[in-house]
Image (cartoon, rainbow, N blue to C red):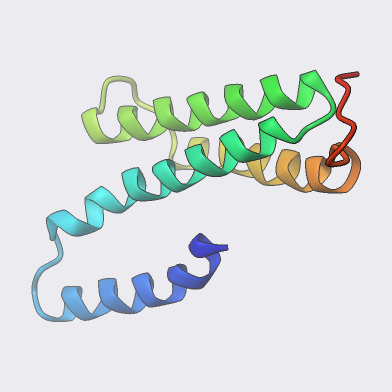
Length: 113
């Protein structure tokens, strides 16, 4: 939810900094890591309350792939197309929605299936 609320303001700030000739502002490059930290916390909380083990593993694998793609983008180790970042990001979104809809534990009863 934080990501969804903050995104419009971040794009406004980025366009303002570009207009002020700060196109390579260091804060813009560190936002990826801020959002990775937020998503790390969200995945941790989601997997604690998930009833299906495969969802837990899929969410963590997707997060680590997203981390790898972002680190690769920052360090340019392997040439990847720009679209590569969307696959793990969309996987996380879809897994999170699926988890919310079908895999929630009841407060007094959580058995892994």
